Image 1 (cartoon, rainbow, N blue to C red):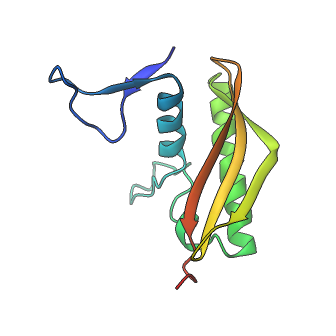
Image 2 (spheres, rainbow, N blue to C red):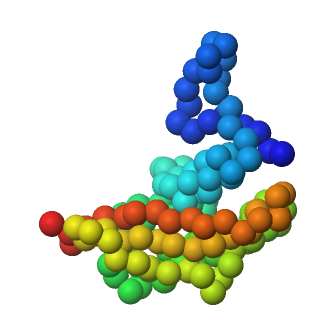
Length: 127
């Protein structure tokens, strides 16, 4: 079972870094990949969803870009034999106060279990 540093980084009771494994570690990896990796280095290409996850979620073209990047991220995960995206489960759901929720299912290849992912996002048009 894969193990890595817990996100956010924190101290364990023994004084070292806290680690995570299993489902918690899988979620940490996906959340990092779906975050923002934008920087000013022209040679380091960004593969994360970036700031469009915050500012473009209400825009049809912005959502298309987000879904394209999501597919590329999970293509990489699949090549690394970590996760497989269940394409037919991707949904945009509405929440309270202008929240938009990105929802999908994926299969963890290590445990061979189907898992759900959802992330709340606020549109720049929300008040």
